[in-house]
Image 1 (cartoon, rainbow, N blue to C red):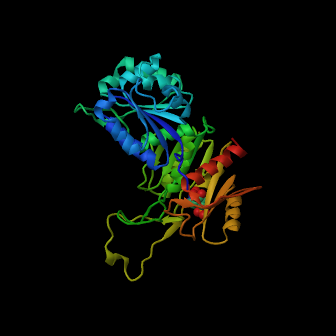
Image 2: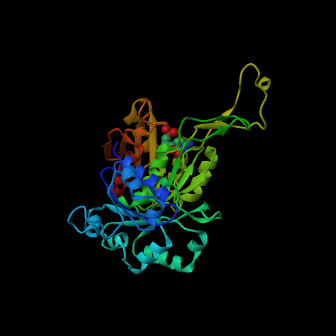
Image 3: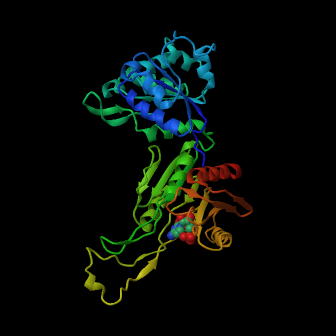
Length: 400
Ligand code: C5P
């Protein structure tokens, strides 16, 4: 499994805010993921964290002075900007945002960014009053207009003791948004509707029937689509997984709720993917409270009724939507998957062998076969993220 960051050269700019210490963690994570870092600090940033800290943690050269002895005879601001696959300024202070918006290049970081030919993201962090300042707002809008990605700050406790918007987002958020700069935006303007996770069919108020699905495959699909520019609605059954911001998540409990939510989002969707492990049946009449053990008697007799098939009911309403299902099978994988492709009138089905330890439920890897009416693509054992991108590649190739 290769990380998307493997061997990517990332220029990390650090400006002088208290969140500079968080950039150290970020640099460490990127290094562990295989990225090669080049770090430029502003003079003010060096007052919060020393260049030595970054050098040791990121195992990378750290530049902070325009006039320092060159490490080679290339002009530092040109060679650094040419070498990078992408650049990130984190934290980005109101000062550097203003400079970038107005073309001021008065130190190594701003000069290097001015010469940059690769994508740039900034992660602003500042006091909430500064963030709300109309000049800062205008500058942020300017950056966006110039194609710079702005990773919006979070709301929470600020260093000044106040609560407000201005915190540097957590690492996963920054890395997810940064990653989108590495992908072609080939799903831009497309809307995805994805079902994911298990459903819970309650027997009484405290007990339910479910399955071990964690929602990982569905989330990987949602993330892949989002990274490639799509708008994503994720209808998610009970799950512990964290959904990155920017993905519209609708949390549901049982199959009927999943069906109603998915149906309400169907019309606006271009692509629908059913990755949820929906319970095939539900209790006909749910008991209230916590039913006492004695009530069940000698033999437990719960009348079960079938749940509607969510995907099959959506295909009936299809106008232009491309509809993709999953077939989690423990035997006769291809034959059973092809049968579901026809029966549910799907465009594609992802056949998934769940009899193996390393594929299917609750693991991070998967090996699938993508099947269409006249189409078959066998994938290797890959991470769920890589599998999701291959599925997106197929959708782009065939339809989008
Ligand atoms: O028939 P089976 O449950 O194996 O079909 C799997 C595919 O159908 C998956 O894509 C799953 O999300 C979808 N499905 C559904 N509604 C159900 C059962 C399955 O959408 N009630």
